[in-house]
Length: 327
Image 1: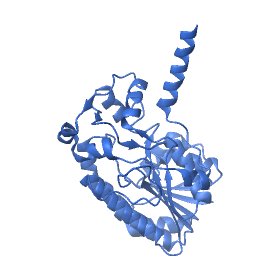
Image 2: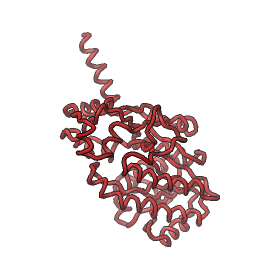
Image 3: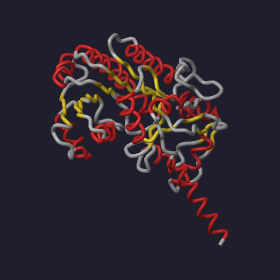
Image 4: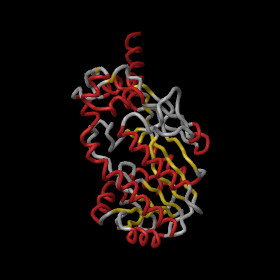
């Protein structure tokens, strides 16, 4: 198939394009400039032949520009991965990025969707979020609404993505697929060994809040790409939760992550102190966040995510230590 990727230079862009090419698809990758295209090529995509991978230079905030790009590409499928997250994961940087991130999702995403409809695209995939489900008992599924109460920032973001999901799923003559991803880890993410969260953990700046009851659902960036390609090829219209098989409470994953980084155990702070340090978001992510079920993706997309990297290595190390003790 010919597939148009908007957001090709984001964290998921490189592995997604590589996976699409590996599956034999022809890809047109959207970038804002020739410099961005060159950067993507330098990241390992330059091995693709011109017949397999081309670049479209267009501005998603310019409706005519993006419409012309998609009309010229004439793809069967559009995959939209438009986001503008900062390289650092802090209260200040996330707050500063919110306005542009919202604009690129709402305005840019609207323009890409309209252009896809004008070009007669058959199928449209859009990135969404798995970890903003309304707090409650048990794991969330695709029918669980997103959280509009509690943390103001989470509520605002949840409203944005809910509106984006609605627009796509109600678009006529288009097979709309929503991919709600879990927390990315792996190369190029905040949780990579050289990522910002890893540095915060080493510096004792990423604490367990309260009882650490917040449940996180994880997703390796390569698995995100694999699931996205599978959805493009055979997914059914609707929503998919794309996360691994083992949602974990903060108090379960964070100490193991710290050991994996050879860092000291994370500090623990009270809810009251966390509000002062990180605001309501810190409480939501640390104590209220709800994990998700990936049963639908496993069933319909044959999704087989890997186990969380630092848990695997921790278990392997424990097994080795046990063998040493027995000797």
